[in-house]
Amino acid sequence: MEDPHEHEPVRVSAPGRKAWAIPAAAAGFALFVAAGARVLVLFAGSMMSSVALIGSWLILTLGLAYAGVRLRPGLGAALLAGFAAGVLAIAFFGGMRMLT
Image 1 (tube, helix red, strand yellow):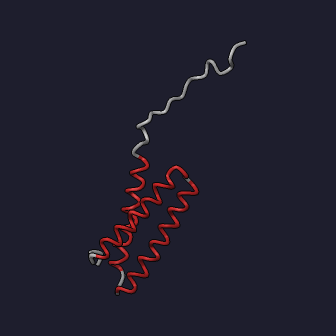
Image 2: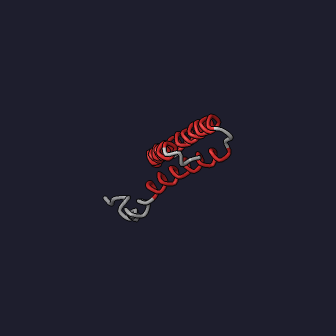
Image 3: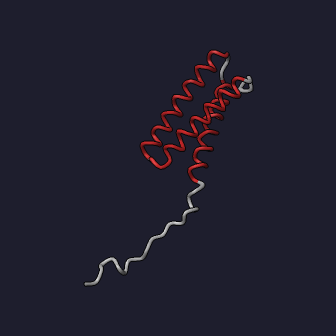
């Protein structure tokens, strides 16, 4: 008896084709988090309002990362890693007073 799947074409995905997508998503989201915090500091009138604005920005971007986890599980870890890298960049540059 003949195999019904014998004449189907074999689909082979290129291993390096999307290898850059996950690190690029993590780096892009980290830049998005850090740049958004920098822009909000520029709009803030005082230190207390800049802390509140940065906190609300981080909550918003964490929500976006979580939505990315739910919608695209393959990129979810990259978005959360990008969020963590963005928070570390904000803490590092904020500690050196380079955000203001």
